[in-house]
Amino acid sequence: MSAHGSNKAIIFALAGNLLIAVIKYVVAFITGSAAMLAESIHSTADSFNQVLLLIGHKQAKKSPSEMHSFGYANEVFFWSLMVAVLLFFVGALFSIYEGFHKLFHPEALTNVYWIFAVLISSILIEAKSFQVAYGEFRKTTKLPFFKAIKASTQVSLVVVVLEDSAAMTGLVIVLISTLLAWLVNPVFDAVGSIFVGLLLLAVSILLIAEVKNLIVGESMPREKRQMIRNVIHRYKKIKHINRMQTMVMGDSKYLVLLSVDIDNDMKGSAAEDMIEQVKIDLKKEIPEAGNIYIEIQDAVRNQNQ
Image: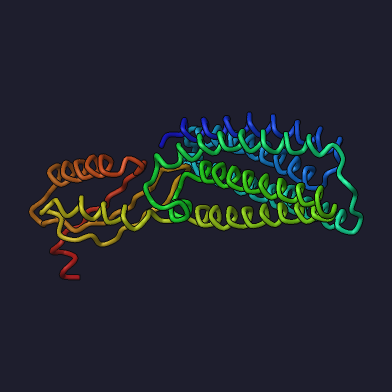
């Protein structure tokens, strides 16, 4: 999956969230709904998040420099972490605070039909945004949803998919809490705001945990490492893989470091040509392998050591 797919999902989500945020703020002001205000803050936080992701993608494209010889691909992880932190502090904590405030000072909702109209419209817009993001995300993996989220290095798409999932779930929560506040007791509006905050809290913690693994230096998934071994084993002159190190580099690229033993009759240009062909085969099997470095050693010399 190219950065184009990620950018498409981010831009679509940004446009949808900006439109929804404006409408929600207007209706929250008209109706006095705490849950709707929480959702307004949620949509605003999501909009800022998508702007940060676009900045991260732009920064990640910068050419390598003397101080950053591998380039700036990993910068997208930093901006994704900022997204998770912003979602935590702006979205989750404010929603919980507003919910507890209204819990002790409940107010009857006014113009409830406006709330229902906005919620239903927002659900439809968010569903379309999720469809685009999820469609791009599924192009990268065939794993079940939660396993795919955990295994994916497409951190930008993961952020958008999780945000859209949380947004739709939050809207359903607000729809139910508003209906209960209207028909049963105004206190359910506050309860809805608290639940939205807790939902955002859970998503932000999940994002922080996933991005932390990538920043620390997460390896390739096990199946891709096995693909590397399978390619190496095609070459009879390569006797042994001494070391394999892999690391995620940016939004869907990998760094691959290998040390292999070769037959002692492989010398000079013949050995170099074979290694170059190995690199070509590895890139065919794993297009995401952006940088591949292979150190060759003499098998007989290693056996004598």
